[in-house]
Image 1 (cartoon, rainbow, N blue to C red):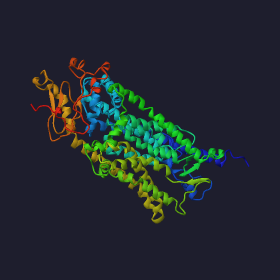
Image 2 (tube, one colour; image 1 turned 60 degrees about the horizontal axis):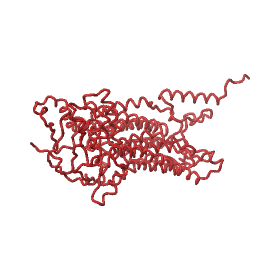
Image 3 (cartoon, one colour; image 1 turned 90 degrees about the horizontal axis):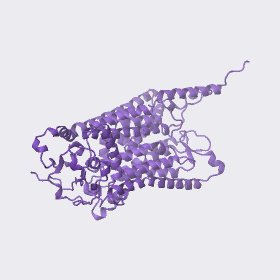
Image 4 (spheres, rainbow, N blue to C red; image 1 turned 180 degrees about the horizontal axis):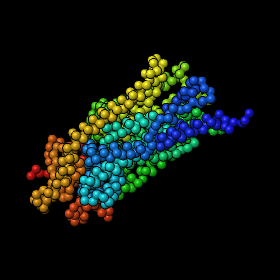
Length: 606
């Protein structure tokens, strides 16, 4: 007989390579071969008893958009939000936009947090954005602070879109392609992320830093490489120290995973397989634990190096040594016994974040909260007699174990801040993407386990409606979120529209208002918290507060650099040689940390 040109095994190998290449070309990027949610399934050929056909993984045939496509989609949505959404937090205006305006133009309102006596706001964070604003103003937006304001927001939105796209691709690679697709829809349709993505707040910066490090903390721990720990810890440290110190709580599940999973690597059969190299040398588990602890210590030291430039920048502006992240923690956590603390600025009931989450994420919030219970039920279901997943010899099945750590940060921060009396919507910005991930995992697990259950009790045709049910759920999620976004725009846009109109037409006001020896004053009353910053106030107008029903502490102007501003006739940038402006290091009078009213904030009604 003539010798065959190729064996059946080589034919099968080429067939698998061709199908994988076809899937890669369709998605724009290869679909990963490892995923903690892709359990072992039989192919159609295997179920019919064809021994010459091997089982293939259905997840390889799932279409997933490429990073470029996802970035373009998210960039359009985030940029649109930056141009259309109002400012939702007065803390963003007075603690970040106003100090940046002061560094850029030499004029701005100061809060007590920037008083060197208290020093709980870092100039290092403001300096990052001031450099961006000065560059944009010099290149394209000279003469219009209003356009500059929106340009900065658009850049921040594009940064968030990049980080979200990176998070999506990491989910596809390290968890499951279908979870990645659900995550993409939840990210794009989220009303919460629609207004958080372009925010100037440190919690948004921390969110982006954590998302940028997602390829490392979504990856399974490796017994041989510390790259995951070092780069992941660096991203968390940047988010916590440069941005928001309380975001450091996200590192707790990351560290626990590193310590709990010792000397193992995640396999596609939802099991932890001991490394053959570790078995060969007889490496005990205790040695792996010591190695991981040492690795985490090195990562912690690496993360603390981020603090050095922050302290140096604050030393330059405050002209005294301050560790601002510690000052923030000390005031918010350890000052309550003295009658100070965040409770002075309002308290909310324990269910505040439940209601707020339903507004911003509607159906995604209960799905996210149900992620851990769903994983527990799936774990018990898969371990029932007759349903245990087949694993190779030497493996111990631990279904869904790593995902507990991946979504654990959402549960942890949600619980921590729900127990605090003082609550702000922005506190949970850090875990908004993780909330979407938890909801996506729940959707995938429910669909993945309900389908075989329906097949065993009902007609197989019923399972055909599962994709349509999932699609209906996601469409409803996007529709409700769109209604929320539309409500924010149509019912809360008026202050920014009024101030934009004022900025555009201020030069057309009567001459007595603009040519007097004293700068004209724009009076603000009880709606002082809706003021959108001096980027909406042209030179030489000043903002003055008049008495109203509010009896707390209001901001006042930074000390202006007198050797620069008198020569100004329009809004011109403060030269770098004038840095640091004296308002950053002088000890002003009339500030307190008890939110007590200061009468010198008000101007005469006349």
